[in-house]
Structure formats: C-alpha cells, structure tokens
Length: 257
Image 1 (cartoon, one colour):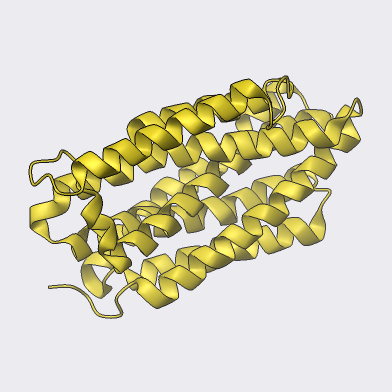
Image 2 (image 1 turned 90 degrees about the vertical axis):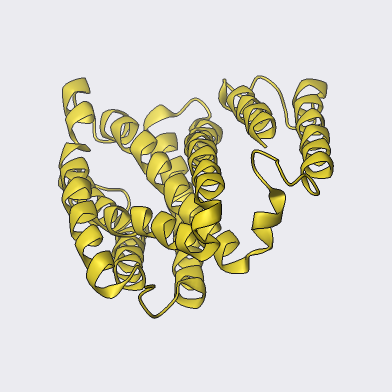
C-alpha cells in the first residue's frame, strides 16, 4: 500500500508540474498501472498471512473503513485549503508575501485549542459528539466559501478559523473512534494505516487544489486563481458532506467502555 501511495503521489506531482504530461501519457499511465499491480501483489501475499505487517482483512470491518474514509476526506480538504489560501491572498487580493504566510496562523491556533476540547469531550461523551460538531463547523465554512467567493482577506481568516476549528474537533476523534472499532490487538496495524493514509490524503489534497488552479489560470493568474479556488471549494464541499454522512452512520452513538 505504501508503494502504491508513493507511485500515486508521484503521478499527482507530475500532473501538477505545469501539467507537463497528460493523464493518458505513457509516463502517467505507467506509474498508475505499476502502482495498481504492486497493490494487487500486496493484497495477494498479505491476505492470508497471519504475520503480515498490515493485514488487508482489517478493511472488512465496515465501521473502521468508513471512518478511515471520513478521516482521509477531512485531511484532503484541510491540505487543499492550506495550499489555496496563501496563493489566493497574493494572486486575487494582491496581498504581501508575509500576509499570505500569516493568514492561516489564527486557524492553526484554533485547531490546537479545539483538538484539546475534543479530547475532553471524547473522554466524557464518546467520539460521536466532537466528530459531528467538527464536521458541521467545517461544512458550514465551506458552504460560506462557495457563497461568498471571491473572498476578502478578513473572510479568508474567519472562514479558515471556522473550518480549522471544526477539523481540530473531528480529525483526532475519527482516528480514535476508528481504532476502537478494531480492538486493542489490532491497534498497531490500525495506527499504521491511519498514518500512512494521512500522508497520502495530504498529498492528494495539495495535488487536487494545485491542478484545478493550474487548469483555471490559463495565463490569467488573478482571475484564474479565483476560479480554480471556487472549483476546489465545490469539490471539498462534497467531500465534507460525505464526511458528515459517514460520521452520522458509522460512528457509534454510545461511548465505548
């Protein structure tokens, strides 16, 4: 799985690098096919191996798999927004480089505070409450991004704070809830899966936003960045809607003992 993720990440990097190679080019399809072949080989070898480092049979646990998907969608959206907004401030709002660097800082602070609050809620009420609250906050932020775009500097700060606060509430709680569904015996493998896919999702989120902006720019940096960002907001809105739906269905309602 790690090899497949590396190959797919390289594929996305190639796509974003000035769109030098089309999706149907030999190089891109070659890396994709190679990654799929290696994934299938890993599945074949590891499926019946009781001593496998990561057992693919863990994905038969539906609650675990669906919470893992929600976890990945949250990470994709977060890295995509973190990539977009500094560029947005410079290209669309004509802000300085220093402002572009600092504009996401308040969101990072709120993320840390909300993660701490989520931990307390998880201990007292279980994972469902902080996950649902966080997903709703992030969803509200993305809805407003789509409605208000193009965004002013102040709107970017406030909406990113709202989104990142929600992310802080739900992200760690999704991982904790997913691991609980596996049982203590499989916690190490589950943790490895979550951390591997976290890195893959982050790369995918950056590649997604970068590719959409690159396509939209078409020699018009300012207007193209605004259009590409709006396309990205729409895609991320769909991901977070699915994220919330998965949380409502698959995160246990009762606190695990």
